[in-house]
Length: 300
Ligand code: HEM
Image (cartoon, rainbow, N blue to C red):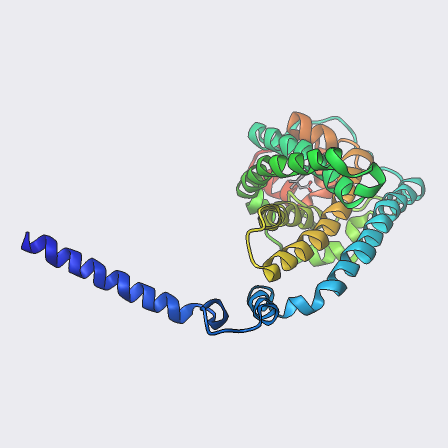
């Protein structure tokens, strides 16, 4: 009995100390005090949560409504046009489809990649539909797309995480990646030259980091926005990150699909069947090709 009373006393003491501590941590405005004007009180009260950002409310709305939307419109039109021009002027890289098959992407990697691809496309379409909601008449249709965006994001987030773990070792930047960028991997010239690159070239590495880490950041900021999980400051910063990172993802995604489907013949097959042919590996991923040869994985 005595022990129970002592335990009860200690618990009450700790709880009391915690209440006093919480009280000192609380912003003074949220503590009740005297008789004040209700308007002034709520203004002060609101400021505790919105901070300085309250003053930027209107500017933020203009930024979001006018500039961000216009930038998206420009990116959606200009990026495919630039790559169409590239295709017409430079054309696709073609490689011989002969020789021994070099294993490139594991079965697990390919399955996860294609789930990421499908979910990403759904999110891209539903995300853009929300930006251009007015064009589609808003209402239930856009609300449905918003739910879809949120639910599909969970699957995409998981696939981005798995791809990160599976492929991060191939995406570590190397000094010769800088050289690759200086000549844009040779993609601006019609003649094909060997440019030193890993299993993922420098451009692919950029997409890797953006798509996986960027994808996870999109999921976190999206979660905060979806559930209003934070103060106004946190929400607005999340919106900014989500929108700006979204732009980078949009552009790089178009580049990625262009490279994988149109620019390098054989690239799409490698993500479907899991192997590359020696000529493509030798030309576009020379450092990795030489490494495989040295280790005896390929004989040519
Ligand atoms: C319709 C959409 C997509 C298509 C057609 C596509 C196509 C491809 C192809 C063909 C490759 C092999 C490249 C090569 O080795 O030559 C590849 C690789 C890759 N994909 Fe995708 N992909 C798509 C969407 C995505 C998405 C949404 C992600 C985001 C997680 C992603 C992440 C990657 C990564 C990290 C690689 C390896 C590095 C690279 O090639 O950039 N892909 N993809």
